Length: 196
Image 1 (cartoon, one colour):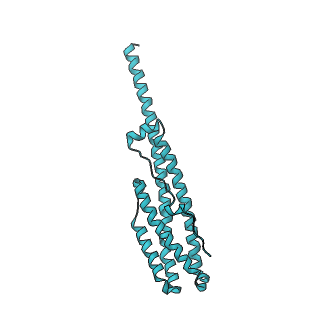
Image 2: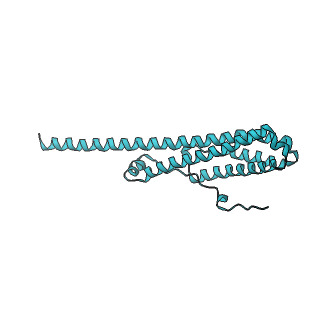
């Protein structure tokens, strides 16, 4: 066999191996990005579940606490604001995620005030509809925490792949970028004030 032919075969074999390696890395990054998007869809699903519970909860409380209209309006307004901010998995930037979290935080705060109102109304606290809605809301908040943790884990795995050598070469070539993590709300860093 001639030297030129042998060198050509070796070059083609090396190029083929690099291509196979690159395809494998690309496919792995695509799979990890899909996992992030699926995890984000679960977060959105749980937030939607919470949004769907709010009107029912407000309706039940409204029947008992008519003079608490400011709190009820705050919940409705916070729900409206929270539903107006949506992000899809392709726009999970730090800024978008912070805006989304802020709106969801406002809704959570308004719901906390709504739950505090229930303490003033013994009949409301005994109402079966209210108790069921309160239980569903608590379960939804737990599901949200689990979904956010699962999302953050998938983002962590993806971000490591995007940054780790030699995967970062393939990621850079095909435009894979780091995804934003869910972070604690700013007020979560402050100790709550408990007064008796």
